[in-house]
Length: 559
Image (cartoon, rainbow, N blue to C red):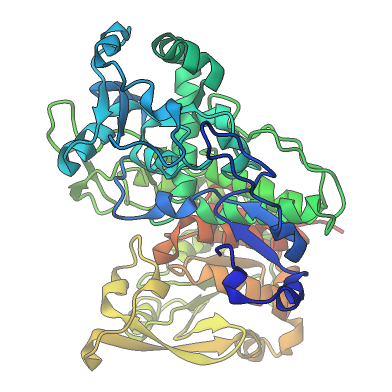
Protein backbone atom coordinates (compact mmCIF):
# COMPACT_ATOMS: atom_id res chain seq x y z
CA UNK A 1 0.00 0.00 0.00
CA UNK A 2 3.02 2.29 -0.23
CA UNK A 3 4.51 4.76 2.16
CA UNK A 4 1.95 7.51 1.74
CA UNK A 5 -1.04 5.46 2.92
CA UNK A 6 -2.94 6.05 -0.33
CA UNK A 7 -2.55 9.80 0.16
CA UNK A 8 -4.78 9.82 3.25
CA UNK A 9 -4.13 12.01 6.24
CA UNK A 10 -3.34 10.74 9.70
CA UNK A 11 -6.86 11.47 10.90
CA UNK A 12 -8.37 9.66 7.92
CA UNK A 13 -6.13 6.63 8.47
CA UNK A 14 -7.23 6.35 12.10
CA UNK A 15 -10.70 5.41 10.82
CA UNK A 16 -9.19 2.09 9.71
CA UNK A 17 -8.19 1.19 13.27
CA UNK A 18 -10.67 -1.67 13.57
CA UNK A 19 -9.70 -3.35 10.31
CA UNK A 20 -7.19 -6.02 9.38
CA UNK A 21 -4.67 -5.56 6.61
CA UNK A 22 -2.75 -8.23 4.72
CA UNK A 23 0.74 -7.10 3.78
CA UNK A 24 3.15 -8.56 1.28
CA UNK A 25 5.86 -8.33 3.94
CA UNK A 26 6.46 -7.64 7.59
CA UNK A 27 8.43 -4.61 8.69
CA UNK A 28 11.29 -4.44 11.16
CA UNK A 29 12.23 -1.47 13.28
CA UNK A 30 15.57 -1.74 11.55
CA UNK A 31 16.98 -4.28 9.15
CA UNK A 32 20.71 -4.77 8.66
CA UNK A 33 22.53 -4.34 5.40
CA UNK A 34 26.09 -3.62 4.43
CA UNK A 35 27.57 -0.36 3.21
CA UNK A 36 25.75 2.94 3.62
CA UNK A 37 22.29 1.56 3.03
CA UNK A 38 21.00 0.96 6.54
CA UNK A 39 17.43 2.10 6.58
CA UNK A 40 14.76 2.24 9.18
CA UNK A 41 11.32 0.78 8.54
CA UNK A 42 8.95 1.91 11.24
CA UNK A 43 6.06 -0.21 12.45
CA UNK A 44 3.67 2.56 11.47
CA UNK A 45 1.18 0.04 10.15
CA UNK A 46 0.32 -0.91 13.71
CA UNK A 47 -0.55 2.69 14.35
CA UNK A 48 -3.47 2.44 11.97
CA UNK A 49 -4.48 -1.21 11.79
CA UNK A 50 -5.49 -3.37 14.72
CA UNK A 51 -4.52 -6.64 13.01
CA UNK A 52 -1.71 -7.12 10.53
CA UNK A 53 -0.24 -10.25 9.03
CA UNK A 54 1.95 -11.06 6.08
CA UNK A 55 1.79 -13.47 3.19
CA UNK A 56 5.17 -12.53 1.80
CA UNK A 57 5.32 -11.55 -1.86
CA UNK A 58 2.41 -13.90 -2.38
CA UNK A 59 1.53 -12.59 -5.81
CA UNK A 60 4.76 -13.90 -7.27
CA UNK A 61 3.73 -17.44 -6.43
CA UNK A 62 0.52 -17.12 -8.45
CA UNK A 63 1.72 -15.24 -11.52
CA UNK A 64 1.01 -17.33 -14.62
CA UNK A 65 4.03 -15.69 -16.24
CA UNK A 66 6.32 -17.24 -13.61
CA UNK A 67 7.45 -20.80 -14.30
CA UNK A 68 5.37 -23.50 -12.61
CA UNK A 69 6.56 -27.07 -12.25
CA UNK A 70 5.03 -29.59 -9.86
CA UNK A 71 7.66 -30.83 -7.45
CA UNK A 72 7.95 -34.53 -6.61
CA UNK A 73 10.89 -36.61 -5.43
CA UNK A 74 11.12 -38.11 -8.89
CA UNK A 75 11.09 -34.81 -10.75
CA UNK A 76 13.54 -33.22 -8.30
CA UNK A 77 16.05 -36.05 -8.64
CA UNK A 78 15.96 -35.69 -12.43
CA UNK A 79 16.98 -32.02 -12.34
CA UNK A 80 20.33 -31.30 -13.99
CA UNK A 81 21.82 -28.43 -11.98
CA UNK A 82 22.57 -28.55 -8.26
CA UNK A 83 22.74 -24.78 -7.70
CA UNK A 84 21.15 -21.87 -9.53
CA UNK A 85 22.02 -18.22 -9.00
CA UNK A 86 22.36 -15.40 -11.54
CA UNK A 87 22.74 -11.74 -10.62
CA UNK A 88 23.21 -8.46 -12.43
CA UNK A 89 26.72 -7.11 -13.01
CA UNK A 90 26.05 -3.62 -11.73
CA UNK A 91 26.44 -3.01 -7.98
CA UNK A 92 23.44 -3.50 -5.73
CA UNK A 93 21.69 -0.38 -4.53
CA UNK A 94 22.91 -1.09 -1.04
CA UNK A 95 26.28 -2.39 -2.23
CA UNK A 96 25.56 -5.78 -0.69
CA UNK A 97 28.62 -8.03 -0.60
CA UNK A 98 26.37 -11.05 -0.17
CA UNK A 99 25.20 -11.08 -3.78
CA UNK A 100 28.62 -10.59 -5.29
CA UNK A 101 30.71 -12.90 -3.15
CA UNK A 102 30.12 -15.98 -5.32
CA UNK A 103 30.71 -14.05 -8.54
CA UNK A 104 33.99 -12.29 -7.71
CA UNK A 105 36.12 -15.28 -8.60
CA UNK A 106 34.43 -17.74 -10.93
CA UNK A 107 37.30 -20.24 -10.65
CA UNK A 108 36.44 -20.94 -7.03
CA UNK A 109 33.08 -22.30 -8.13
CA UNK A 110 34.84 -25.43 -9.38
CA UNK A 111 35.39 -26.31 -5.72
CA UNK A 112 31.69 -27.15 -5.32
CA UNK A 113 31.30 -30.79 -4.32
CA UNK A 114 28.13 -31.08 -6.37
CA UNK A 115 28.33 -30.46 -10.12
CA UNK A 116 27.03 -29.12 -12.45
CA UNK A 117 25.66 -25.76 -11.34
CA UNK A 118 24.39 -22.60 -13.00
CA UNK A 119 25.91 -19.61 -11.21
CA UNK A 120 26.97 -16.35 -12.80
CA UNK A 121 25.82 -13.01 -14.10
CA UNK A 122 22.74 -12.35 -16.22
CA UNK A 123 21.98 -14.74 -19.09
CA UNK A 124 19.41 -14.66 -21.85
CA UNK A 125 15.78 -15.02 -20.62
CA UNK A 126 15.09 -18.33 -22.35
CA UNK A 127 18.30 -19.86 -21.03
CA UNK A 128 17.61 -18.42 -17.58
CA UNK A 129 14.16 -20.01 -17.46
CA UNK A 130 15.37 -23.37 -18.76
CA UNK A 131 18.11 -23.60 -16.13
CA UNK A 132 15.92 -22.20 -13.36
CA UNK A 133 13.31 -24.96 -13.56
CA UNK A 134 16.03 -27.58 -14.07
CA UNK A 135 17.86 -26.75 -10.81
CA UNK A 136 17.59 -28.51 -7.47
CA UNK A 137 18.57 -25.62 -5.18
CA UNK A 138 17.91 -21.95 -5.93
CA UNK A 139 20.06 -19.53 -3.96
CA UNK A 140 18.11 -16.77 -2.24
CA UNK A 141 20.76 -14.29 -1.08
CA UNK A 142 19.98 -11.13 0.85
CA UNK A 143 20.37 -8.01 -1.23
CA UNK A 144 18.78 -4.57 -1.43
CA UNK A 145 15.58 -5.57 0.36
CA UNK A 146 15.11 -7.92 3.31
CA UNK A 147 12.31 -9.65 1.40
CA UNK A 148 12.73 -11.66 -1.79
CA UNK A 149 10.47 -12.25 -4.75
CA UNK A 150 12.98 -14.83 -5.94
CA UNK A 151 11.86 -17.02 -3.03
CA UNK A 152 8.29 -17.22 -4.28
CA UNK A 153 9.43 -17.80 -7.85
CA UNK A 154 11.64 -20.68 -6.70
CA UNK A 155 8.76 -22.28 -4.79
CA UNK A 156 6.49 -21.99 -7.81
CA UNK A 157 9.14 -23.52 -10.09
CA UNK A 158 9.74 -26.45 -7.73
CA UNK A 159 13.31 -25.40 -6.90
CA UNK A 160 14.19 -25.81 -3.22
CA UNK A 161 15.15 -22.44 -1.74
CA UNK A 162 18.71 -22.32 -0.37
CA UNK A 163 18.46 -19.19 1.74
CA UNK A 164 21.36 -16.97 2.75
CA UNK A 165 19.54 -14.31 4.74
CA UNK A 166 19.17 -14.03 8.49
CA UNK A 167 16.42 -11.46 8.11
CA UNK A 168 14.25 -13.13 5.46
CA UNK A 169 12.19 -15.39 7.78
CA UNK A 170 11.44 -12.38 9.98
CA UNK A 171 10.60 -9.84 7.31
CA UNK A 172 9.16 -12.13 4.64
CA UNK A 173 6.97 -14.58 6.54
CA UNK A 174 5.12 -17.20 4.52
CA UNK A 175 1.98 -18.66 6.07
CA UNK A 176 3.75 -19.15 9.43
CA UNK A 177 0.67 -20.81 10.97
CA UNK A 178 1.08 -23.67 8.51
CA UNK A 179 4.78 -23.99 7.66
CA UNK A 180 8.13 -22.77 8.92
CA UNK A 181 11.05 -21.94 6.62
CA UNK A 182 13.04 -24.92 7.84
CA UNK A 183 10.24 -27.22 6.65
CA UNK A 184 10.55 -26.45 2.94
CA UNK A 185 13.91 -24.68 2.54
CA UNK A 186 17.58 -24.99 3.51
CA UNK A 187 18.96 -22.17 5.66
CA UNK A 188 22.54 -20.89 5.71
CA UNK A 189 23.72 -18.33 8.25
CA UNK A 190 25.08 -15.15 6.64
CA UNK A 191 28.21 -15.25 8.82
CA UNK A 192 29.03 -18.80 7.72
CA UNK A 193 28.43 -17.89 4.07
CA UNK A 194 30.74 -14.86 4.18
CA UNK A 195 33.53 -16.91 5.76
CA UNK A 196 33.23 -19.92 3.42
CA UNK A 197 30.60 -19.51 0.66
CA UNK A 198 31.36 -22.79 -1.13
CA UNK A 199 31.77 -24.94 1.95
CA UNK A 200 28.74 -23.52 3.77
CA UNK A 201 26.44 -24.28 0.84
CA UNK A 202 27.80 -27.79 0.29
CA UNK A 203 27.46 -28.54 4.00
CA UNK A 204 23.92 -27.20 4.18
CA UNK A 205 22.53 -29.51 1.50
CA UNK A 206 24.02 -32.68 2.99
CA UNK A 207 20.70 -34.11 4.09
CA UNK A 208 19.72 -37.73 4.59
CA UNK A 209 17.25 -39.24 2.15
CA UNK A 210 14.36 -39.09 4.67
CA UNK A 211 15.19 -35.46 5.50
CA UNK A 212 15.24 -34.51 1.82
CA UNK A 213 11.99 -36.32 1.08
CA UNK A 214 10.34 -34.55 3.98
CA UNK A 215 11.51 -31.16 2.74
CA UNK A 216 10.30 -31.96 -0.77
CA UNK A 217 6.87 -32.92 0.57
CA UNK A 218 6.70 -29.68 2.49
CA UNK A 219 7.93 -27.71 -0.53
CA UNK A 220 5.10 -29.25 -2.54
CA UNK A 221 2.67 -28.25 0.20
CA UNK A 222 3.96 -24.66 0.14
CA UNK A 223 3.84 -24.73 -3.66
CA UNK A 224 0.15 -25.62 -3.53
CA UNK A 225 -0.50 -22.88 -0.99
CA UNK A 226 1.33 -20.17 -2.93
CA UNK A 227 0.11 -21.10 -6.42
CA UNK A 228 -3.42 -19.77 -6.11
CA UNK A 229 -3.92 -20.01 -9.88
CA UNK A 230 -3.62 -23.81 -9.89
CA UNK A 231 -6.66 -26.15 -9.59
CA UNK A 232 -5.21 -28.01 -6.59
CA UNK A 233 -4.24 -24.85 -4.72
CA UNK A 234 -4.57 -24.76 -0.93
CA UNK A 235 -4.47 -20.97 -0.82
CA UNK A 236 -8.01 -20.56 0.52
CA UNK A 237 -7.73 -22.76 3.64
CA UNK A 238 -4.16 -21.59 4.35
CA UNK A 239 -5.17 -17.95 3.99
CA UNK A 240 -8.22 -18.54 6.20
CA UNK A 241 -6.02 -20.15 8.81
CA UNK A 242 -3.73 -17.11 8.90
CA UNK A 243 -6.73 -14.82 9.33
CA UNK A 244 -8.38 -16.91 12.05
CA UNK A 245 -5.28 -17.46 14.11
CA UNK A 246 -3.99 -13.91 13.69
CA UNK A 247 -7.28 -12.67 15.06
CA UNK A 248 -6.92 -15.00 18.01
CA UNK A 249 -3.41 -13.79 18.69
CA UNK A 250 -4.67 -10.22 18.64
CA UNK A 251 -7.22 -11.05 21.28
CA UNK A 252 -10.37 -11.33 19.17
CA UNK A 253 -10.72 -14.94 20.30
CA UNK A 254 -9.56 -16.68 23.44
CA UNK A 255 -6.99 -19.43 23.61
CA UNK A 256 -3.27 -19.46 22.83
CA UNK A 257 -2.21 -20.66 19.38
CA UNK A 258 0.78 -22.79 18.66
CA UNK A 259 2.82 -21.69 15.65
CA UNK A 260 4.54 -25.03 15.13
CA UNK A 261 4.57 -26.49 11.68
CA UNK A 262 1.84 -28.53 10.08
CA UNK A 263 4.47 -30.28 8.00
CA UNK A 264 6.83 -31.99 10.40
CA UNK A 265 6.36 -35.60 9.43
CA UNK A 266 7.09 -37.45 6.24
CA UNK A 267 3.42 -37.84 5.39
CA UNK A 268 2.48 -34.19 5.79
CA UNK A 269 0.46 -35.19 8.83
CA UNK A 270 -0.55 -32.34 11.06
CA UNK A 271 0.77 -32.52 14.60
CA UNK A 272 0.07 -28.97 15.71
CA UNK A 273 -1.89 -28.80 18.96
CA UNK A 274 -4.35 -25.95 18.72
CA UNK A 275 -6.20 -24.59 21.69
CA UNK A 276 -9.17 -22.75 20.28
CA UNK A 277 -12.95 -22.75 20.31
CA UNK A 278 -14.33 -26.12 19.20
CA UNK A 279 -15.93 -24.82 15.99
CA UNK A 280 -12.66 -23.37 14.70
CA UNK A 281 -10.73 -26.43 15.78
CA UNK A 282 -13.23 -28.64 13.98
CA UNK A 283 -12.92 -26.64 10.76
CA UNK A 284 -9.13 -26.70 10.81
CA UNK A 285 -9.08 -30.39 11.65
CA UNK A 286 -11.41 -31.11 8.73
CA UNK A 287 -9.29 -29.09 6.29
CA UNK A 288 -6.12 -30.86 7.40
CA UNK A 289 -7.83 -34.23 7.21
CA UNK A 290 -8.98 -33.66 3.65
CA UNK A 291 -6.21 -31.58 2.16
CA UNK A 292 -3.07 -33.02 3.70
CA UNK A 293 -3.41 -36.18 1.64
CA UNK A 294 -5.25 -38.22 4.24
CA UNK A 295 -8.71 -38.42 2.69
CA UNK A 296 -8.20 -36.81 -0.68
CA UNK A 297 -6.08 -39.07 -2.88
CA UNK A 298 -3.35 -37.33 -4.84
CA UNK A 299 -1.69 -38.87 -7.87
CA UNK A 300 1.83 -37.50 -7.57
CA UNK A 301 3.61 -39.40 -10.34
CA UNK A 302 5.04 -37.61 -13.33
CA UNK A 303 2.64 -37.09 -16.27
CA UNK A 304 5.31 -38.57 -18.57
CA UNK A 305 7.18 -41.85 -18.66
CA UNK A 306 10.96 -42.00 -18.18
CA UNK A 307 11.39 -42.13 -21.97
CA UNK A 308 9.48 -38.86 -22.34
CA UNK A 309 6.28 -40.36 -23.74
CA UNK A 310 3.04 -39.10 -22.20
CA UNK A 311 1.49 -41.16 -19.42
CA UNK A 312 -2.19 -42.03 -19.86
CA UNK A 313 -4.94 -43.32 -17.61
CA UNK A 314 -8.45 -44.70 -17.92
CA UNK A 315 -11.28 -42.37 -16.99
CA UNK A 316 -14.61 -43.33 -15.47
CA UNK A 317 -15.94 -44.38 -18.88
CA UNK A 318 -12.99 -46.64 -19.57
CA UNK A 319 -11.55 -44.18 -22.08
CA UNK A 320 -7.81 -43.51 -22.31
CA UNK A 321 -7.05 -39.91 -21.34
CA UNK A 322 -3.89 -37.89 -20.59
CA UNK A 323 -2.57 -38.46 -17.07
CA UNK A 324 -2.76 -35.18 -15.19
CA UNK A 325 -0.03 -35.77 -12.65
CA UNK A 326 -0.48 -34.33 -9.15
CA UNK A 327 -4.21 -33.81 -9.19
CA UNK A 328 -7.03 -34.81 -6.92
CA UNK A 329 -8.77 -38.03 -7.83
CA UNK A 330 -12.47 -37.56 -8.35
CA UNK A 331 -14.58 -39.79 -10.59
CA UNK A 332 -12.25 -40.44 -13.54
CA UNK A 333 -10.33 -37.18 -13.44
CA UNK A 334 -6.92 -38.74 -12.84
CA UNK A 335 -7.33 -42.42 -13.49
CA UNK A 336 -8.16 -43.11 -9.85
CA UNK A 337 -11.89 -43.49 -10.43
CA UNK A 338 -11.80 -46.91 -8.75
CA UNK A 339 -11.12 -45.28 -5.41
CA UNK A 340 -14.06 -42.90 -5.86
CA UNK A 341 -16.34 -45.78 -6.84
CA UNK A 342 -15.09 -47.82 -3.91
CA UNK A 343 -16.17 -45.02 -1.61
CA UNK A 344 -19.74 -45.52 -2.86
CA UNK A 345 -19.59 -49.18 -1.86
CA UNK A 346 -18.09 -48.34 1.53
CA UNK A 347 -20.74 -45.72 2.27
CA UNK A 348 -23.47 -48.28 1.62
CA UNK A 349 -21.73 -51.42 2.85
CA UNK A 350 -23.24 -51.48 6.31
CA UNK A 351 -26.93 -52.38 6.80
CA UNK A 352 -29.37 -49.57 7.46
CA UNK A 353 -31.83 -50.98 10.01
CA UNK A 354 -33.77 -47.70 9.99
CA UNK A 355 -35.02 -48.63 6.50
CA UNK A 356 -36.39 -51.93 7.76
CA UNK A 357 -38.80 -50.35 10.23
CA UNK A 358 -41.33 -48.99 7.75
CA UNK A 359 -44.93 -50.08 7.72
CA UNK A 360 -47.75 -49.58 5.24
CA UNK A 361 -49.30 -46.91 7.46
CA UNK A 362 -45.97 -45.25 8.23
CA UNK A 363 -43.51 -46.27 5.50
CA UNK A 364 -39.85 -45.41 5.53
CA UNK A 365 -39.20 -42.73 2.94
CA UNK A 366 -36.12 -42.58 0.71
CA UNK A 367 -35.33 -39.40 -1.21
CA UNK A 368 -32.81 -39.72 -4.03
CA UNK A 369 -31.73 -36.25 -5.14
CA UNK A 370 -30.03 -36.18 -8.51
CA UNK A 371 -31.54 -39.42 -9.80
CA UNK A 372 -30.27 -38.88 -13.36
CA UNK A 373 -31.71 -41.34 -15.91
CA UNK A 374 -31.98 -44.50 -13.84
CA UNK A 375 -32.14 -43.71 -10.12
CA UNK A 376 -29.37 -46.25 -9.59
CA UNK A 377 -29.19 -45.66 -5.86
CA UNK A 378 -32.84 -46.52 -5.48
CA UNK A 379 -32.37 -49.64 -7.58
CA UNK A 380 -30.03 -51.00 -4.94
CA UNK A 381 -32.01 -49.75 -1.95
CA UNK A 382 -35.36 -51.13 -3.13
CA UNK A 383 -33.96 -54.66 -3.30
CA UNK A 384 -32.70 -54.53 0.27
CA UNK A 385 -35.49 -52.45 1.77
CA UNK A 386 -38.74 -53.35 0.00
CA UNK A 387 -41.00 -51.74 2.62
CA UNK A 388 -39.84 -48.20 1.81
CA UNK A 389 -41.39 -45.64 -0.49
CA UNK A 390 -38.96 -44.06 -2.94
CA UNK A 391 -38.90 -40.53 -4.35
CA UNK A 392 -36.54 -39.66 -7.19
CA UNK A 393 -35.81 -35.97 -7.84
CA UNK A 394 -34.32 -34.93 -11.16
CA UNK A 395 -34.03 -31.33 -12.37
CA UNK A 396 -33.36 -32.14 -16.06
CA UNK A 397 -36.80 -32.59 -17.69
CA UNK A 398 -35.74 -35.21 -20.25
CA UNK A 399 -34.07 -37.30 -17.54
CA UNK A 400 -37.18 -37.08 -15.39
CA UNK A 401 -39.27 -38.38 -18.28
CA UNK A 402 -36.87 -41.29 -18.75
CA UNK A 403 -37.17 -42.05 -15.04
CA UNK A 404 -40.95 -42.08 -15.22
CA UNK A 405 -40.86 -44.50 -18.12
CA UNK A 406 -38.29 -46.76 -16.49
CA UNK A 407 -40.16 -46.98 -13.18
CA UNK A 408 -43.74 -46.85 -14.46
CA UNK A 409 -44.51 -50.38 -13.24
CA UNK A 410 -43.08 -49.83 -9.75
CA UNK A 411 -45.74 -48.39 -7.40
CA UNK A 412 -43.20 -47.70 -4.66
CA UNK A 413 -41.30 -45.21 -6.86
CA UNK A 414 -42.46 -41.60 -7.30
CA UNK A 415 -40.60 -39.42 -9.78
CA UNK A 416 -40.47 -35.64 -9.23
CA UNK A 417 -39.29 -33.51 -12.18
CA UNK A 418 -37.51 -30.84 -10.14
CA UNK A 419 -34.61 -30.21 -7.82
CA UNK A 420 -34.70 -29.09 -4.20
CA UNK A 421 -33.59 -25.92 -2.46
CA UNK A 422 -34.80 -23.47 0.16
CA UNK A 423 -36.66 -21.36 -2.41
CA UNK A 424 -38.25 -22.00 -5.79
CA UNK A 425 -36.39 -20.90 -8.90
CA UNK A 426 -35.46 -21.79 -12.46
CA UNK A 427 -31.97 -22.81 -13.49
CA UNK A 428 -30.38 -23.13 -16.90
CA UNK A 429 -27.97 -26.01 -17.39
CA UNK A 430 -25.58 -26.28 -20.30
CA UNK A 431 -26.09 -29.40 -22.36
CA UNK A 432 -22.44 -30.28 -21.74
CA UNK A 433 -23.34 -31.00 -18.12
CA UNK A 434 -25.79 -33.74 -18.97
CA UNK A 435 -23.28 -36.58 -19.03
CA UNK A 436 -23.13 -36.40 -15.26
CA UNK A 437 -19.57 -37.70 -15.01
CA UNK A 438 -17.03 -35.56 -13.13
CA UNK A 439 -18.90 -32.36 -13.87
CA UNK A 440 -19.76 -29.45 -11.67
CA UNK A 441 -23.04 -28.08 -12.89
CA UNK A 442 -22.55 -24.71 -11.25
CA UNK A 443 -19.54 -24.00 -13.48
CA UNK A 444 -21.33 -24.66 -16.75
CA UNK A 445 -22.89 -21.47 -18.01
CA UNK A 446 -25.59 -21.39 -20.64
CA UNK A 447 -24.58 -20.91 -24.24
CA UNK A 448 -25.61 -18.01 -26.45
CA UNK A 449 -28.10 -20.11 -28.43
CA UNK A 450 -31.32 -21.32 -26.90
CA UNK A 451 -30.72 -24.94 -27.85
CA UNK A 452 -27.48 -25.07 -25.84
CA UNK A 453 -29.23 -24.86 -22.48
CA UNK A 454 -31.98 -26.72 -20.69
CA UNK A 455 -34.26 -25.07 -18.14
CA UNK A 456 -34.89 -26.93 -14.92
CA UNK A 457 -37.25 -26.25 -12.05
CA UNK A 458 -36.22 -25.98 -8.41
CA UNK A 459 -38.92 -26.41 -5.76
CA UNK A 460 -38.75 -25.59 -2.08
CA UNK A 461 -38.32 -28.16 0.68
CA UNK A 462 -41.78 -27.25 1.95
CA UNK A 463 -43.31 -27.97 -1.45
CA UNK A 464 -41.58 -31.37 -1.68
CA UNK A 465 -42.55 -32.41 1.86
CA UNK A 466 -46.14 -31.27 1.29
CA UNK A 467 -46.31 -33.29 -1.93
CA UNK A 468 -45.07 -36.39 -0.11
CA UNK A 469 -47.48 -35.77 2.74
CA UNK A 470 -50.45 -35.75 0.37
CA UNK A 471 -49.61 -39.32 -0.67
CA UNK A 472 -49.92 -40.55 2.91
CA UNK A 473 -52.55 -38.14 4.22
CA UNK A 474 -50.02 -36.39 6.41
CA UNK A 475 -49.08 -32.76 6.88
CA UNK A 476 -45.73 -31.55 5.61
CA UNK A 477 -44.33 -30.99 9.09
CA UNK A 478 -44.84 -34.65 9.97
CA UNK A 479 -43.01 -35.97 6.90
CA UNK A 480 -39.53 -37.10 7.91
CA UNK A 481 -37.44 -38.80 5.22
CA UNK A 482 -35.64 -41.87 6.52
CA UNK A 483 -32.80 -41.63 4.03
CA UNK A 484 -31.55 -38.67 2.02
CA UNK A 485 -29.38 -39.93 -0.86
CA UNK A 486 -27.70 -36.99 -2.63
CA UNK A 487 -25.80 -37.29 -5.91
CA UNK A 488 -26.58 -34.06 -7.75
CA UNK A 489 -23.41 -32.97 -9.54
CA UNK A 490 -22.36 -30.19 -7.22
CA UNK A 491 -25.68 -28.99 -5.81
CA UNK A 492 -24.91 -30.74 -2.52
CA UNK A 493 -22.92 -27.80 -1.12
CA UNK A 494 -25.78 -25.31 -1.16
CA UNK A 495 -28.54 -27.88 -0.75
CA UNK A 496 -27.27 -29.20 2.57
CA UNK A 497 -26.63 -25.77 4.04
CA UNK A 498 -30.09 -24.62 2.99
CA UNK A 499 -31.65 -27.84 4.33
CA UNK A 500 -30.01 -27.09 7.66
CA UNK A 501 -31.43 -23.57 7.62
CA UNK A 502 -34.85 -24.98 6.83
CA UNK A 503 -34.63 -27.47 9.68
CA UNK A 504 -35.97 -30.73 8.26
CA UNK A 505 -32.55 -32.34 7.77
CA UNK A 506 -31.99 -32.37 11.54
CA UNK A 507 -34.51 -35.21 11.83
CA UNK A 508 -33.36 -37.37 8.90
CA UNK A 509 -31.88 -40.64 10.29
CA UNK A 510 -29.43 -41.38 7.44
CA UNK A 511 -27.61 -39.19 4.90
CA UNK A 512 -25.63 -40.49 1.93
CA UNK A 513 -23.71 -37.66 0.25
CA UNK A 514 -21.74 -37.83 -2.97
CA UNK A 515 -19.30 -34.91 -3.15
CA UNK A 516 -18.52 -33.78 -6.63
CA UNK A 517 -15.73 -32.09 -8.53
CA UNK A 518 -14.60 -28.86 -6.97
CA UNK A 519 -15.20 -26.97 -10.19
CA UNK A 520 -13.76 -23.64 -11.26
CA UNK A 521 -13.66 -22.38 -7.68
CA UNK A 522 -10.79 -24.75 -6.95
CA UNK A 523 -10.23 -27.42 -4.35
CA UNK A 524 -9.36 -24.97 -1.56
CA UNK A 525 -12.65 -23.12 -1.75
CA UNK A 526 -14.69 -26.30 -2.11
CA UNK A 527 -12.84 -27.96 0.76
CA UNK A 528 -13.78 -25.01 2.95
CA UNK A 529 -17.44 -25.42 1.96
CA UNK A 530 -17.30 -29.18 2.46
CA UNK A 531 -15.92 -28.68 5.96
CA UNK A 532 -18.63 -26.11 6.68
CA UNK A 533 -21.23 -28.73 5.82
CA UNK A 534 -19.47 -31.35 7.94
CA UNK A 535 -19.38 -28.98 10.89
CA UNK A 536 -23.07 -28.25 10.43
CA UNK A 537 -24.06 -31.92 10.16
CA UNK A 538 -21.97 -32.92 13.16
CA UNK A 539 -24.31 -30.93 15.40
CA UNK A 540 -26.99 -33.58 14.92
CA UNK A 541 -25.34 -36.46 13.04
CA UNK A 542 -22.23 -38.61 13.20
CA UNK A 543 -20.14 -39.40 10.14
CA UNK A 544 -19.60 -43.16 10.10
CA UNK A 545 -17.72 -43.14 6.80
CA UNK A 546 -16.25 -40.39 4.68
CA UNK A 547 -13.87 -39.73 1.81
CA UNK A 548 -13.11 -36.16 0.77
CA UNK A 549 -14.78 -35.43 -2.57
CA UNK A 550 -16.07 -38.99 -2.56
CA UNK A 551 -19.00 -40.41 -0.58
CA UNK A 552 -19.99 -39.90 3.04
CA UNK A 553 -22.51 -41.58 5.31
CA UNK A 554 -24.01 -39.74 8.27
CA UNK A 555 -26.28 -41.21 10.96
CA UNK A 556 -28.54 -39.24 13.30
CA UNK A 557 -27.21 -39.20 16.84
CA UNK A 558 -29.37 -41.06 19.33
CA UNK A 559 -31.11 -38.98 21.98
